Image 1 (tube, rainbow, N blue to C red):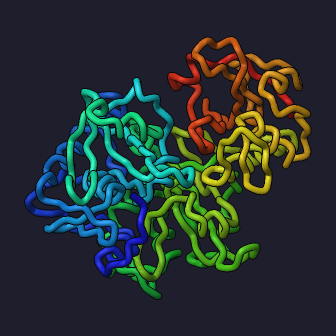
Image 2: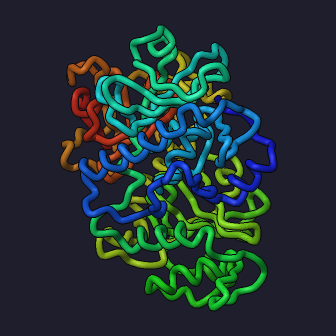
Length: 451
């Protein structure tokens, strides 16, 4: 359950972005937040999931439920979300949030019948609002582990054991392997890895002293990049923002620099962050090194730009957008900006951002000056020109069925590149998904180019 956590313990644990002291009794596996696995494949994912499950089980009978305090040492105190946040961090995977409504936007959607160990499972029992109010972790055999409530504390439950698990079921997200590095690790991943590894080893303040490992926020960024072969050559934030190639928000990759202002609308940067993948950011400042997600209102509203300051041998360097690709970037960026804001409903209301799936795509393209004419998926499928799946380009309209037939068009999406698309499903909020997902494979029908 999401609650405002106000204790001193939380301020230290989360406000400074630390992982928390490892409890001796748990003997957690000591790995960094971006540890490079021998192979980033299903076996590596399963191994990581087993570590998460082991840590979660070790807390049974030792942790109690609390929505007002997050205590990461004995006697442990967690809400449902801080419990999940804790066991992931203890095993080197930083979700960078302790709110269900942000967790549910990470990773990729997975249907209930395709759950794997380590997947996040969300529930919503409240009749008000559109966000989930409870989160658990799937551990296999139709079971989840979660901090249930003040009476049960941490429990392992079969998802068919009580009506709650079926009636309140909301959605599920797969955050492994998207939060794990590739093999071999890219330069961006090594930068992220080192940043996490240094989180509790450097002193942040108003001076830069590499020997003493003391840094300003921009000095820390300059140091990490320099030690990974990228010479920024400056600790001045305005000069750092002039470096490299501008990257759209929809094309961010690990290691990109992101700049924020202190006054909404200003182009003067006050904060620089390192993009850590899957909407997570590492923010070094005078108070410490924080980890957050871009969904947070503050970072969404104060976002200025992002810069790619190196080319990666594994991930090709993105060239500056051409005039022809620019409209597609704008469509993708605007659609992405509606994550966490637009919601599903059987109506079209721009003031409340309530749309059907096709209403969502109509609104996105309308905002960019493109009239799809219709708010019905099957009618939008007559716009533009047909595109083969193998020839998809960013900004193309995608059409799906919702009955696993792959024939009757009832849902829309927008291709955002990298085999990914963004859509507003009936589950309630805007999500990004892969064309290799079970849903997409079973329901993909066609695509149209309207740009």
